[in-house]
Image (cartoon, rainbow, N blue to C red; front, side):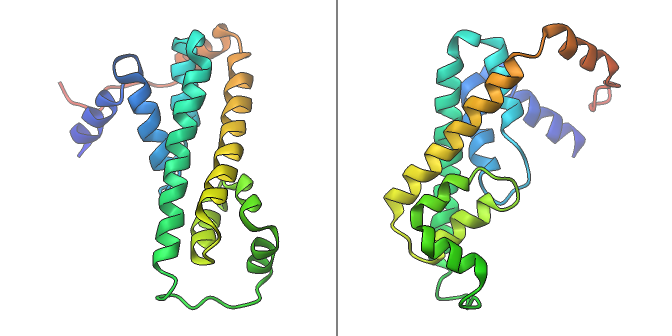
Length: 169
């Protein structure tokens, strides 16, 4: 299993596979799987600062596509699930409508928010637009802030990590 994981990370190596890896990480992290895409997006932006806006765009599209998948999954299970009508969360989402999906980037609640919007059958295209806006702004802010951290700090952090090869020689 360790060899498989090592090969998987090798395939996603940013310098070699770059924007494709950023897209995949962003897409997968927007589903209900617990992972973050910001480290991959930041790492690529750090290697290629001239492509900052391209990285933000690719990560935003990937993360929004993952949110759209959550939306459609929620829409598909509407008949299968009977939620408690009138809960505060549902009333809040119904009151704000698609604009609530500007918060789809939030950890823990963002992915279920997209699924719940589908379950409530909120209009898809406005939901997608609000998702993209929130997720895009998050990438701009997070990557821009991380780009301000000096290289020496990142080098010191890497030196402090106990690195070992997961694949036995």
